[in-house]
Image 1 (cartoon, rainbow, N blue to C red):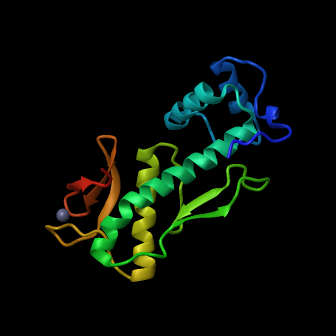
Image 2 (image 1 turned 90 degrees about the vertical axis):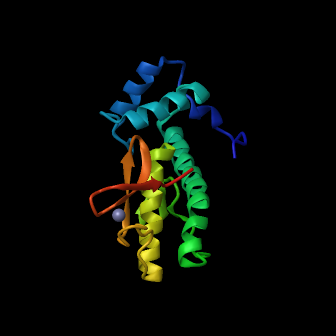
Image 3 (image 1 turned 180 degrees about the vertical axis):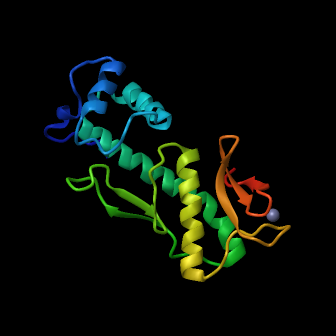
Length: 180
Ligand SMILES: [Zn+2]
C-alpha cells in the first residue's frame, strides 16, 4: 500500500514543527475536517506527525480514510459474532466504501449499514459502528438488537467512562460495554 510512486515525495511538506503543521492544516480551505475543539482529531494527527512528519493535506486525507476503514473493519469483525448469535447469520453485513478519497470527498466515505464512520479512534468509531450494525439489523432483519436482558427493550450505543457502551432506554442503565 505504501509502494513508492512517482511524486511520492509530494506527500510531505518541508520540515515543520507539529504546531506549524497543525496551523497549516487548520488554515487549509479544502480540509475535510475541523480541527477546532476536536481533541480526537488532534490526538490522531499527533500520531500521524510522529509516523509521517508534516504530511500534505492530501496525504492526511488518505491516511484518515485508511484509519476509518481499518477501524470499521476491526470493529465489525468484533461485533458481528455477538449480533449473529442473537439474530442469525449476517453474511451481508460488511464495511462499505461508497466513495474513495478524491475531489468530491477528500477523505472518502466509509459506512457500516447506512452510518458514515467519521471517528478516528476505537471509541468514537466504535459508537458509530455499533449504531451502523444496529441500524443494519433493523433495516434488513426487522429486528431490535440488542435487547436489555431485564426490560426487553432496545439498547442504544452511548459513551460511558470513555467506552462505547450499550445503554437501556429504561432508566438509562448500562448493560455492558460494546467491545472487549
Ligand atoms: Zn433495561
